Image 1: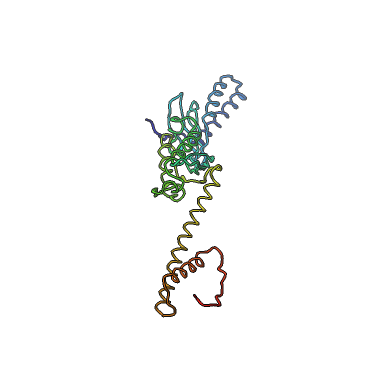
Image 2: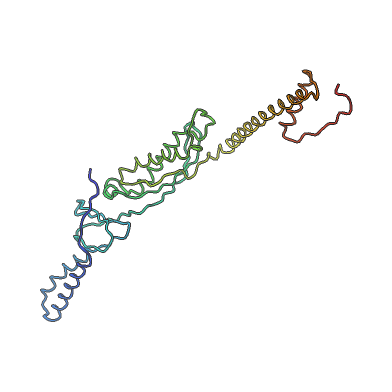
Length: 283
């Protein structure tokens, strides 16, 4: 398989000077001698003019002669080459690609919306020009395929797959690295270098977004309640131990159960407790 190769071409300013000389000879010969033989110079002048080209910074020109690849000019400046060369411009600049948001299924089948932000540039002009058709379109299609494959390899969250240590939502660094490796492998055949690839947007699809939000809220509430109960149990235990140690009051099992119940209600309730004053005996 061929790869890019550099080619040396003539300095454009030198050839421009030769062009000026030929034009001067043609004009002087026609005016002074009125000899039509000087018109022979006219086709040579046209060929020289056709051979000029400019390469701007971070650009290149791929030179092809009658279907045969001759080389790539990456140097910047004003050049002249064989006028029969066809010259294809390929940019070497870094480019951003913000893919469309696509609906895919994650590892457990939940529909999600996802897109990717890709930074890439051409590293091999031969592969970009001849190994694929329309390398920019190739980048778009292969990036979309890589995103779909990545989304199907991980769950969005570990609701349905609690054994999953890596998810799309929580493992962004690892997921982005896997995405970059996948895209790099797919675009290598087109001579494309991937500078950065990361997930730009990630969310549940609209048809399940509200249900999943309620689920997330429920999980958060349960986790908060669990923490509150753990703290309340510790506080009740400390209170009973302190009262018993200081001999402030003695509890039988019924009174202890009643106090524990009251304290748990006060500590775990959503609203502030309303005190009730007992004006009689404890019995």
